[in-house]
Image 1 (cartoon, one colour):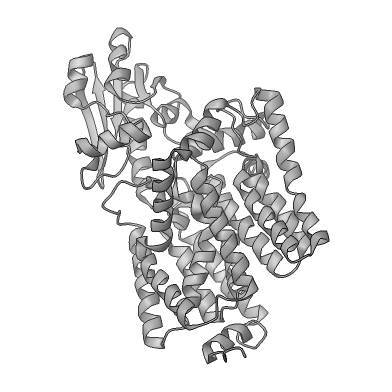
Image 2 (tube, rainbow, N blue to C red):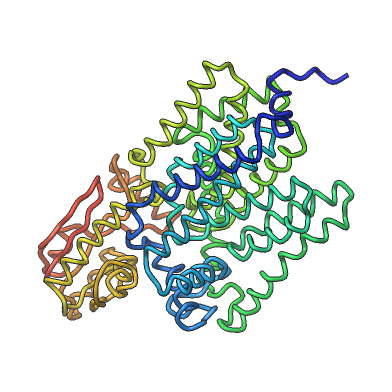
Length: 504
C-alpha cells in the first residue's frame, strides 16, 4: 500500500489543475519577469562585444547579413549551426541595419522568452504558483543567466529551446516537441541530447511510433555538417576546433576536473549549496521528485551536464545554462516543502547569494562572462582603444586575441576606424621576443582572468596548468623592457583587472 502523501505533496500536485494558478495570472507574472529581464539590462545595450561574441558569433552573423554567406569567412568556421546567427541577421534586417543595441535587444528578447517558459515548466513539474515564481526569480538574478541574457552567444538561446522542448514533451505534444528539438539543434549541436533522450524514453515506454518524431532533429544537423564538409573540407569546419573540443577534454585529469567544476557550480557555488541541501532533505522526506515528469527532467539535465563535460575544451560554465531552469525549479520545489520560516530563510539566502554574485567575484580564477566582471573587461579595452586611436593612429600594434580583433574591426564597438594590428598567439616570452625584429611600435598586455589569491603567480599551480592545459606564463614589465626595449606609457585598472600599453 503506497504511503499517504503529505499536504505539501498534494498541494504541489493539485496546484496546476486547481485555482491556485490561473492562465491570466501566468501571463501577468510571466510578463512581469520578462519586463524585468529587458529593463534590468538597459544600461548595457551599447556595451561592446566580448570574447567569443566578437571572435565567432557576431562575425558569422555579419557574414550572413551582409553577404548571405552561411559558412562564415570573416572568422574560422566550426561545427556550431547557424541558427542564432541567422536570427541576428534577420533582426538587423528588420531593424534597418546592424547595431550593437539591436543585437543586445534581440538576445534579451530570447532571454525574456526563456524566463516565461521556465515559469510554465515549473508549473508543469508540479510547483505551486509561489514556488514557480521563486524558481524564475532564482533564474532571473543568477549571475550566469543575467550576464548571458544580453550576450550574442549560443547557450542562452539553447536554454530557451531546451526548456520549451521539455515542456512540450511533458505535455504529450510530441510533434511540437520534435520541432522545438529541431530548433534546438540548429542553435547548438549539443542540443541533440534532448531528442535522443526523448526518443529513448518513448521507446522504453513502448511508444515507438511517437519516438520516430525525434529522429527529425537529426536531419538539419546532418545537412549542416555536409555543407561544412563540402565548403571547408572538414566535417566540423576545421581540424583544430574538432581536436580541442572532441579529444582534448577526454584526458582523465581534465575530464575529472571538468566534472568537479560542473558539480560545484550547479550544487555548491553562489548559494546553490542551500538549494542542494533542501533537495536532499526533500528526497528523503517526500515523494515530490518521484513523478514521471521529474524523472524525465532530471535525466535530461544530467545527460546534458555529462555531454558538455565530455565535449568542449574550454569547460565554460555557460555550457550549463540549458540545465539551469531545471536546477532552480528543483531548488524551489524542495524549499516549498519546508516550514514557512525555513522556506523564507532558505529562499532569501539563495536570492541574496545570487544577487551578490553578480557584482562580487569568487576568490579563485573564473570565466569573466560568468557575471558582470566581463563588463569591466570590456570597459578597460574600450578605454585603451580610444587612447590608441588618438596617440597611435598609424602605429603597428601587437596584441593577442580578443584585443587584436577589437582594434581591427569597428563593428565590435571599441574603435571608430581599424588600427594596424599584429596579432600574436599569446604574450609569452616565446611569442613576444620575435617582435623585436619587426616594426612593431606598441605592445598591449591585459589581465586574462580574475586572480584575487595570486594563483596565477604560484609556481606549483602554473606548473600544473602548463602540464595539463598548455598554459604559458605571460611576460611582465621587466621582460618587455629586456625583450623589446619598450616602456610602459599607459595603464588602467578596474576591480582587479588591468590593461597596459608599452611603447618601443
